[in-house]
Image (cartoon, rainbow, N blue to C red; front, side):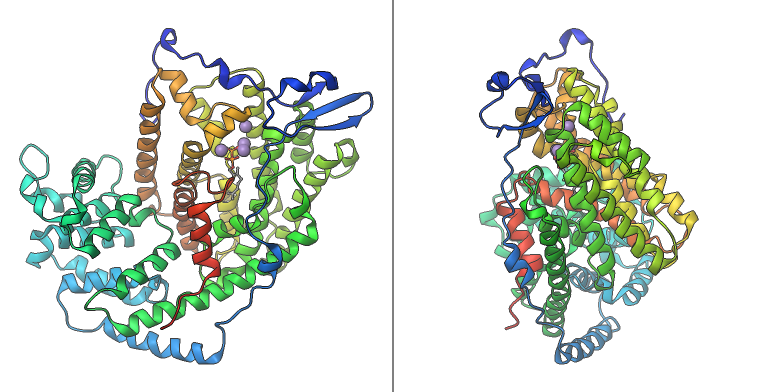
Length: 590
Ligand code: 0FV
Ligand code: MN
Ligand code: MN
Ligand code: MN
Ligand code: MN
């Protein structure tokens, strides 16, 4: 079972300290000293009462909005477009070269990891189908590296290749042969392949166990430098979990060091990266103008994370033609952040009840009944949603507002439930928690956007189907929630918040934090296995491609934002570098 079993309540942990803070409340100013000094106390008069509010003391944006607004677009001139056209033709020709099957697989892998897969969909499809049908090639069956590469690329593409191709590398007892130990390249390939496993595929589970243990135990000083870098990179995060643009940026530098590199391919990858980045720079610069005009960069009651929200949107859907998606989705993500901070920190339970009611009724009559800051927040949410609705109805002929409203409502009801749990010291089981927390993380509304702002065939039926949350969408949001909780819950609980996945599991089972972490990480892998299957199920509507990729990419974005700490709430270090190297810094061409 995904959520494990609960142990008798007699061994449940009591963690009173986790619940020592309550939501802001009405109180006399003299009692405000009971709040921890790490919070800014903002007092505001409403009638006779004074509201003592908490503040999470968010760090301001790490990006200077003057700089972001002034970003220039350098790579759209004709001379680059012509060069790219010529290079694309040249690379297309390379798919037709006579070569060994394994060399062809390596070529496809390089093209995709360089971020160029979207230019060569037809060529890749033809090449992989022919490899899929060819079961005669001895190397592809007998060599662990070749078999793993074949398996990974075919699965990535959606071909139903059986896990049994790995049987020949296993003992009768069902474990991998120890004689493979010397084959680091093969084990690395097996490791990457194992992330494409689905539920019930025990061979791939064993592949993951075997390969991760051997890669972790390796002495990398004894391995050739390039291979060693690839091993560390894979252990840091497997290819299947990496956002493609980020992988492309890293892989270009690796590929450049390769002896047998194809110069025109590398040149194309660099040019294409810069051209796409130019489009992204323009988009984020326009968004910064909107943000500053909204005055949102001056509001301190919620996180100012415009650029990070844009980066999420870029990871979800990067292709140049989807500017509308990125531009509108970024705005929605900023509003999801606002709402989350209002429910988690800023509002009193009474105010939040009232706000939830406004959001469910979707009516701005009488909004002055809301306290000013919350009223302004609701108005921003309402206007932003209507803007997305207007753009969609005028450009795509369908009104998505009823569907967006519904998901905002679900999200706010989930937030309200968490407020209730927190204020009453209620500790749900992991399953009870997840039923709510998949709604409160905000991923579902982004995925809904990714559907109606990218599909070529938008219909009311399609929108209705997606708004009922197909399981692929649910799995994606679930991974987002788990990853977020792994990295943010210690701060959240110290500040005063409901129990998150880790604490719910610890409370339910009596497990230590370390065991609970391991368990949640295990659930992340289990949920990926579900999603690996779900993305290739039959869907009743065409034009689902970008939406299904967005489901995978939302999970990937959450790995990339949360693997090294809270990259969204406290965006330092890795997130900052990842973001800069993807969106701001061009690749040097010589
Ligand atoms: C997570 O923050 C977060 F970023 C939310 C909910 C807003 C949605 C934004 C994007 C997808 C960019 P936090 O850890 O505070 O969320 P929870 O739900 O744990 O309070
Ligand atoms: Mn929060
Ligand atoms: Mn929250
Ligand atoms: Mn909360
Ligand atoms: Mn969180």
